Length: 95
Image (cartoon, rainbow, N blue to C red):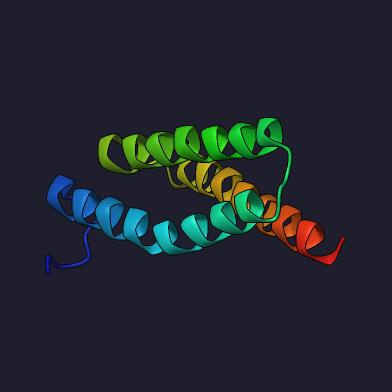
């Protein structure tokens, strides 16, 4: 594992990869919950697509720059999409 140094592109690539792995599990779980409870496909596809675009943008900013607020903004959009998918799945299970 590389030493913590955000000026090192290798370290940033490693962190971007690890960050992507960390969000995969919750995304898949929330997505499956929304799909299996019969949530409208339009909304599931919309939030899943926004999540994927946000994850790609997060990785691109993380690897290519040292602009932490922009990286955090994209990460927050992705996390919000996971939360909305989970809530839609929960709503579908309760109704």
